Image (cartoon, rainbow, N blue to C red; front, side, top):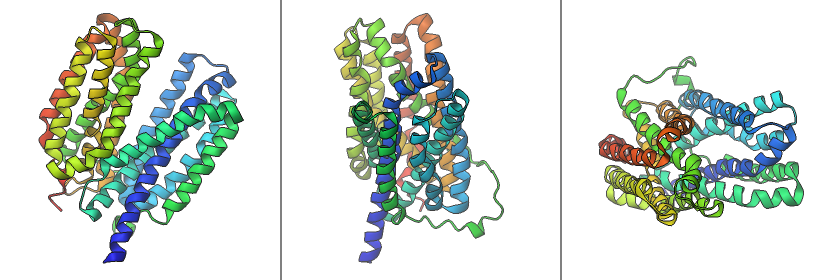
Amino acid sequence: MIDRKTDFQRGRWAAAALFLINGFVVGSWAPQIPSFVARLGISESVFGLLIFGFGIGALSAMTLAGQLVAQLGSRQALRLFVLPVVLMLPLVAQTSDLWIAAIVLILFGGAIGGMDVAMNANVVAVERQLGRAIMSSSHGFWSLGGFLGGGLGGIAIQTTGPLNHALIVAVLAAMAAVWTNAHIAEDGVPAKQEGHFRFALPRQPAVYIVGAMALLCMSAEGSVLNWSALYLQKELLADSATSGFAFAGFSGAMALTRFGGDGIRNRFGAVATFRLSGIIAATGMLIVGLSPWPWLAIAAFALCGMGVANLAPILFSAAGNQPGLNAGVSMSVVTTMGHSGILLAPSIIGFVGERFGLAPVYSAVAIMLGVISSLAGKTAAANMEHD
């Protein structure tokens, strides 16, 4: 019994390490972007198309990853995706041809997106083994990895150069991946019983409702990531240094809240936690839209980050615990729909914001978050009560 409990704990920390690896690699890519653009000699619009290819690669791989999890189990699927994630940044850092760069970024996005689905499905398996929630803190480790990768990457690039930085990131990620390889939790999906490999979308409407909620939730995240600084500069007349605190406050509050989110959810349940989180996020976003002062908006963005922190983790747990559905398949649907919001929201917000301003957009996002909160009952499966 003790050995079994120890195995579960190792599986839990292996899952945390996988989220940390994924976030660290993604965060390390961000400081590589200026040298990448300069090396290729491309404009911002061309780079935008390359990033769109990264997103398309991620979304495409998410569907594939769900099927692989259903066929092989999340443990084997993770082993397939971790190696490409480790290797991609050095390839990006030495690419100097536009078309090769496009292909590499599509593959990079695919590796990141596929691993995203597999590691979320694995956390669902670990939650079942432990009998408690760990999804929020797992996402907290992703945020921590992103913070470390982004924060240290610029210093490393300035000191050692882009390629050496990418190689250091790959070595560190590989070392962590070697440890996790032996401890990744097995979710017991026997490939031999699954029949021939085939793509099949679930027929249960509940998973698509959860996916739509994830789409709206991650659209809200995208609205802060892409437009908060511009909103503070153009409409609240903040300087460039001050405007940067908008996303920093949002992401910092989100990361801190995620590490405490599992305890709240374990005590009060997924539905109550989701409802309260949605109300907090909506309140923060409404204050953003109505604020006449930059620092009030920054504080409101942080409040919104506290609320948003637990929405996606609870939705992913709800997806992975849908009755009668394989966790990998349902997870791929919800993850793909959710990340579609991050891809689509910036362009829609830009179109509306150009005509009406960003303040009404953020007020509308607040209403959207309120709607998500009212649908909290759809997250009941995250409590694993049907198991």
